[in-house]
Amino acid sequence: MVNALSAVLNFKSVDEMLEHTINSTLEGLTNEERAEYRTVKKIYTSRRSK
Image (cartoon, rainbow, N blue to C red; front, top):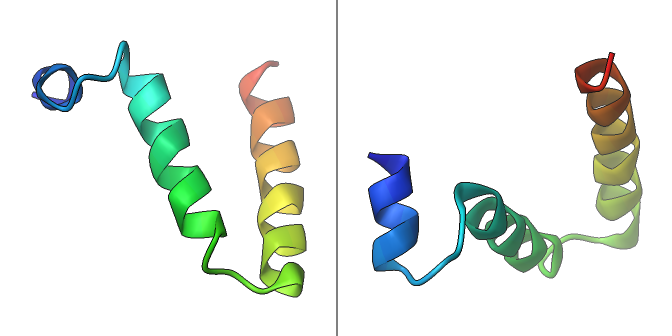
């Protein structure tokens, strides 16, 4: 279902759609909130790659 949504919205993949959504969300955050997001993202990415 998510794949169909990303296709309808003209994204090449679900990952591209999510990245676009995240980038749009980051625009509304304060610098402190962005730093916190990046820290959490680094932790998540490192755990995911194990």
